[in-house]
Image (cartoon, rainbow, N blue to C red; front, side, top):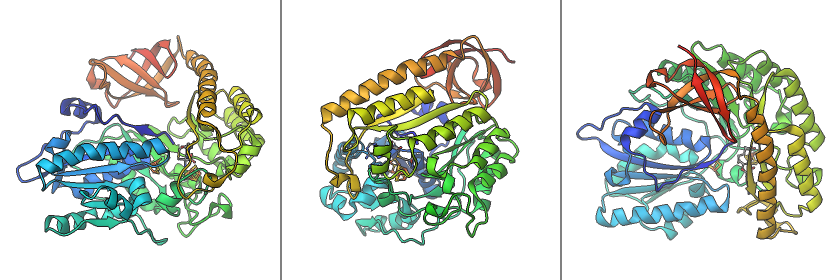
Length: 479
Ligand code: SAH
Ligand code: SF4
Ligand code: F3S
């Protein structure tokens, strides 16, 4: 899963933000301002959107913290660095609260879940600390805070948690791209990963609810739908995915079946999904992709390491050979497929040989893009206690070697598009460059074009003039 850490210093001007996501919600008299800062993965992006919906119309989203009556930070604790960002941002908001004591400040998401009461001790000016299960109690809790109660910590995480039905949609057009959570939590316990501890056990959403949500998003203007979850392949298999992939739950729907159904919804131009786990990735999923899901020839399949020794220590439960077999089959069945991955370097006990196995895997697979990270020890995890922790300098050196190798591979992969005509879905204006639009190929790769805003939301053909590492420049051919 791609993780972004938005630079919170760059506050996007309201006009640009509207252009980016198509929202034009105006704050009416009597409505309060809500500012949300979001860190982490798409699950957090989705949760932030849900918070916005659940708190509307009492609160309307604003673009600067100084206009807000309520500030929420939706946090990520996947690596130490992500966690640190939260504390520096919270410190900035504290100053606002000193000037305006009625300002409500809350911290939600994975750091909140991880730290709970401790966070309140460390940042006593907070009004509320809530984990991902606490989002749905936010509204009531805010009412109590406004009545002078609090502070509150909402971090209990029972196994029986169910994601509540969809909130009232905001009365505005939806941007072209939309994420829909189909399951949350994780039962895999990779030895480096904090997610199972901060997101709880796997819970799938009923199919009917997902279908309803996708339909509503498409009606509101979304065209590119990504089904998200920490481990989408074990959708519908409540509890441990070790029960075998493809097994059916009480919902009676497996992930490939869900994919087929969603693909049938009228108006979807692109259907994607993330994140897949190689141990649960079945031929049936490849089959559905090959049947021609609405233009989805992209697969994000995190490998983490190319060494069997390290994969075992990570508790990934597949081998290098099994992973490569999946890739071979995906390439054979899906024309011009783009494959992306996540990699961790410097995991405890990783030798030069292990690292070289990762390099050779990269060369073998020929990824379009990779997301690579230095191993970061996390609370609660098994790897924290492992012998053979690797020095920071070694980790950094391995990361730059890896990125250098990938740079060459990625550039070659992107260059394959030069001189070709490809169909893209135009997504939005480019907030960084006036007059430029952002579009995406079926492979999920970004193409920048200079064209009129009217093309946003449309499928058009573009001629790829130039491809660099990470993005391409194209010329619109239609209309
Ligand atoms: N469920 C997703 C993972 C989400 S976390 C999956 O299985 O792919 C996204 C990525 O962060 C992981 O794939 C992994 O590469 C990286 N990551 C997780 N924990 C990490 C840690 N402790 N140190 C460094 N990278 C980590
Ligand atoms: Fe973390 Fe592994 Fe679960 Fe992904 S599958 S969220 S890496 S424990
Ligand atoms: Fe981060 Fe939590 Fe997502 S730890 S990666 S925001 S699930």
